[in-house]
Length: 248
Ligand code: 13P
View 1: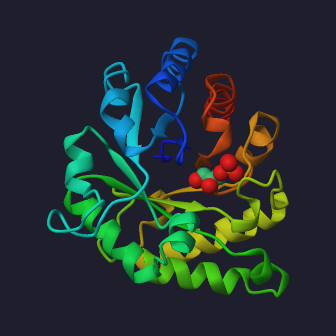
View 2: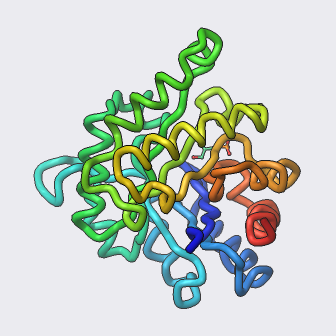
């Protein structure tokens, strides 16, 4: 059975209680989406957003979690707490976390394990910098990140991979279709080689996805959805992306 496509929005450090009106607008326009729809708002908005999810039409997720379930870690949030608030997913290893908080592959893997232990699906992010692409290291970098960031307990059910080239995030620039296809094929092959059932893992593309390029991106082989930043903040834009994925 083909995996269910996933349109995921990452609000990053944007949005407030008033912004939850966008959820109503999104679900009014797409009451029965033809793909799974997920929003990952700032942690404070997770619980109120779950209250607007209309019985699970919308899934809600966190943007990060700590590797431990509880303890003396001021300012952090555990996967268990995310689950308690109603989250079903958590993004781990986003390039902004890797850069801003010096998270390495081992830390990302530990967070994914914590998510799985809490019963949450991890969305593990990988992606090369512009300098790495320009120097021909993209496939080596992505292969190494997949090998070290995806834990042994990963399955197609508890793990989603997001390929997000760092230089495409928030820049309006996207790789060519061939470049996306090449990286997604590498990720698919690595997962098949390691887990056997890798064809079932969902692999998302992220980086400047918007209504005007979504149809084209969703037609690329091994693209099972998108992780959307800026265009997920507005119901009209994210709704258009949900519609494009539903039709893909
Ligand atoms: P943009 O869609 O704003 O480029 O952000 C992508 C991203 O980082 C999603 O996690």
